[in-house]
Image (cartoon, rainbow, N blue to C red; front, side, top):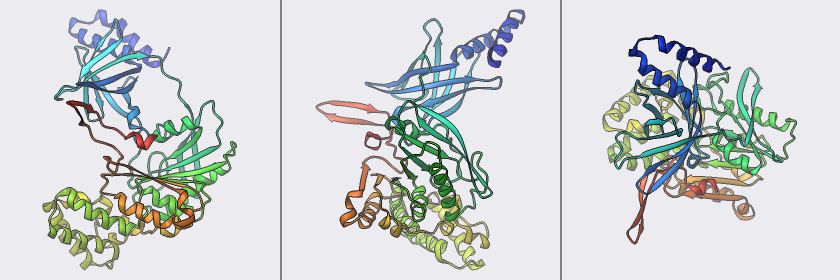
Length: 440
């Protein structure tokens, strides 16, 4: 018997001897025991639904749910959150964009409920099902790159011949994102493609310093992962790379020294770091509704970030501009690693540690490339980036390039919920998600 079963069984044996004030706890404990496992269902609004599943796991400390939405693949992986059960047995569970308040019908094993505060009301219903067989075999991976240990997972399609593998490279930032539950692996495994997803140095269980890593260090990590796959017992015939956002720069730089067989760019820039920053600045001003003076201030700050000498005077000027940014609203266009905390910190700004132009690498790349963009992405605007890719893959190489634009998606390749009008007095509610053009 599992620890959790023993734990709940011992509680249930003791409950009859306790006072009646504990009967609420009795309901909570019973519901927790019944919840554990896999549930499938949908959220419903008006005349529309969106399928999803919940996998509840229980320990002595907490109840946790893993929330999976097929419409979010491949960009978003499963979401996890803590579940609470009150003394009346009501279940409170977090989901994407809100929470669920659920009631369990124990005789039929059906969870029903609604999203508090939603109007029109969003309702939910799920049924307990046998856990489906995973379409991948997931193997733990440890790759050594000098003194750095990179931890990750290799997702191998189950019961299929595997000829190709792809490495997934994350974008900017040091957030610990699961490599075990990778959305690209869930999708690509259907086509017999293995996916290796790894934690960036200094995130998850990988060692090293993420906050201060530079482009060359991230490229070195990727090359080590590629070498691991080249020497894997499965002897993959083709090994490619998926660069997500700023990960596309890492992939392009690594391609100068690594024989990738193909490249996929997911909302990744093909312009230089400087060009991308200036382009997102221009589009971001409109997105944030800022003034001409804000534009001048932001351009000055960006130029200082890239090119100004490391000096007290530079730092003082940047601090004055940041004071204006906080009051005028354009501070939201900056990341924490765009803001120096001392004069010496200017030389460690993200844009200086990652200064790069992928034009030469993309022009020399001999394999096929797929680039997917969001039509509403102001961070990596599609027009400028597709134009640059077309320059790099010109003439006889034009057939190697495929570009896709998801019209209503932003930088996360996610379309927001909305009502869709079809004409002839017909409409439906769209719950949001990654558009099919990204998956198909």
